[in-house]
Image 1: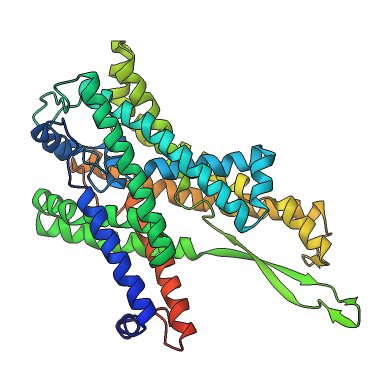
Image 2: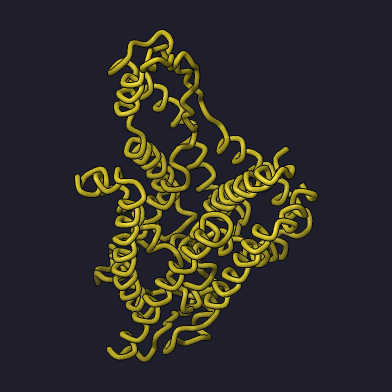
Length: 428
């Protein structure tokens, strides 16, 4: 693997792409530490030390910029949310479905509308964050109230909202630059960098709280979790497909065998993001609606990562959204119709609707262990916090799922480019 990494720098074009990606990452990390005007920096530091639960998860995606109220505080979340919304609307709105079938031209139109939606969501989220951080009821480790915007005037709020929205637009541009001129998917790389940047601090907190033996156990557990994630992410059920021979003109076509790969975790990390967004909604309601019973319930159960309510609801919603997203993105009926059109069939299964029902049955069965694994990894930090009282658990949850997934995809892309140039790949 080390030789393959060295070979990647021997190819001028590949070396240029890697260096370009590193420069963009450096700019992204710089923006994560430049504070927004009008924010109490000392209060932001206290909030960063006590961020947990849903706030901690969103802070994770921004690389710690959210709790510090930096220019890139919103991170890549508005773009992820808008991409998911556009993907869901593609199934509902015929015009978007038509664009999706137009190839590159339609993809450009959908991407442009995704950008517009990202800016709109950034405006809404930055406005909500301004009010949330002013009167959200956050407390530091000493249980003292935290107010990040003590001078709460319309002009200052407008300046904060514009700055955060511009930061989100800049992140979106940087991500697209990496995709076009660098290595890997730009948005995934930026999320990967945000998560990895927090690992040293989280590891230091665990070492200080649990000592050498406890830290060694956590590292060992992390390695086991990484191996499990790789196995599940790469796991798939291959459905054999045979194509009948047919004569087209003077040529004999078909007569070959292939397979349909059905992934165990075809939804990826999307169910966790959906579940986090749903759990974050009552937290916002609790800060906006001045009703003490609602606020107390939210604070004690839905915003507390060690609460049994939080853990149970989080796990159930991840399982639900895993099935929901898989059902939206994978249409067995379309696949069965395409197979029938080109003379393909699953051995022992009639073409058409019986094939679609067969694929749907298999997908339903293999999605269950994938969703259970996803939920167990996601709630592991909450269980760890409930048992030990240590908030940071760097080797589990959404962070490690995204980190491993992005690392695998980027390695595969580098591998394909090395093999094109007759070098040995990473995964030989």
